[in-house]
Length: 330
Length: 77
Image 1 (cartoon, chains in turn red, blue):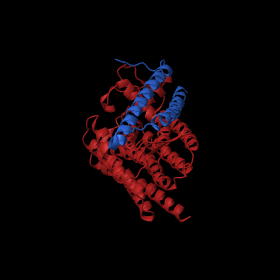
Image 2 (tube, chains in turn yellow, orange; image 1 turned 90 degrees about the horizontal axis):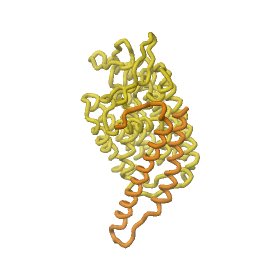
Image 3 (cartoon, each protein chain N blue to C red; image 1 turned 135 degrees about the vertical axis):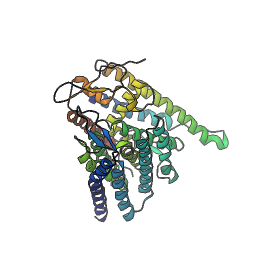
Image 4 (cartoon, rainbow over the protein chains, first blue to last red; image 1 turned 60 degrees about the vertical axis):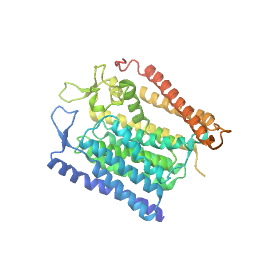
């Protein structure tokens, strides 16, 4: 019962801090002229960026609450990795780096998990059981943070999509951790959902603030770190399959690691009065999840976002099935 | 609908890939090299894992081309 109160307090802290800090941060950024144009609007609408500092404040506050009541190396490693990823994102927000910067820097962000030893060297698969890969697992830890950080960044395409999608993913991940009997990491995963949903209020259409790379990498790296310390790497990958699909489509069409903003736009606006989005005819533009969704015909921005959330719920259901198939840890 | 189908295919490939990983990677061990047994075993595991990932991506790319061939056209050169 006491532990449950700690979890509730942690989630309330996460939600409250982000809910209160985000509008203040948006006003501050606007007053400093730190705004960018919203790309999918006919009128020029300037939106504050980055919102990462509000998200990281919520993550730090909530995880510290948990750590205060139950000190754990797992919580500590998740926190340090997330803060490192935030710093990398913030550097990229301030000065756009090359396409290779983030993967290489995110590899360094994974190091605290290794140094603190907050991982198990067995990789759990559904049905077939565990495979013991002591040395190979070190590479997997680094790979996981790079993948989750960048896939979260790649899904930040329309108003509200990143925060809504990561909110769903964080919640489902917590449920899966409960299914495999890892309550400690489940408690640490809930603040990810809480900060995402609190941020969604300001990020959804019409956005008041964009998360930027600092926000996207914060959420993505935290998700990856939770998956590693919770020993649910495969389940976590299943939950974010739509985001992985997006990255896979992008990389298989561009065939190189390049910043999304440096490629031809895959989605364009219609000429209608009520602007909708449609897939471009430019054969050089990368294939993305949004472009595939729009292949059937033009949709409004909010309709596309809803379809991505539905895909997130579908992959979340697959994640829960995978967790049930994997079974509880003894 | 096709995207849901493709996600389900990705999921199936992950489950099958997991099975292969457990059956292939798990039993790999090297003996007879003394203190280098562990390193050699891990290197073999890494090579096998890399091969499995490449195979997974290859199959996924084929499935993707099949499922989405009529939806989006892009320059593959």
